[in-house]
Amino acid sequence: MTATTILSAIITIVLADFLLERGLSFLNCRSISTQLPGEVKGIYSEEKY
Image 1 (cartoon, rainbow, N blue to C red):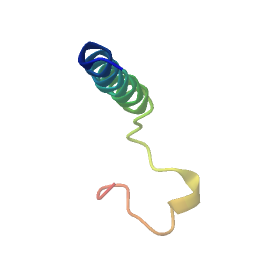
Image 2: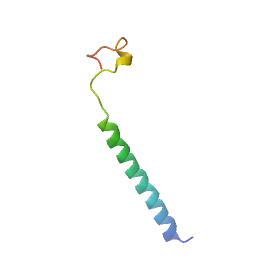
Image 3: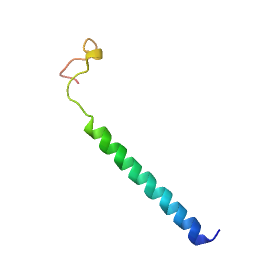
Image 4: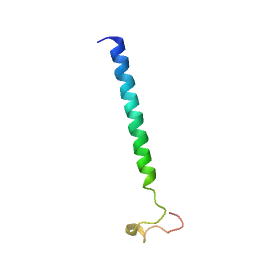
């Protein structure tokens, strides 16, 4: 393996990790809800949530 191959592999891994993290963050932000879920209505108050 040459130095160029190793550098290309490292850059590819870092770039893939960055893109995966950005995609997951985007999906996570899309699922944010301000309404209190039914399972925790008796535990948390609507104001604090």
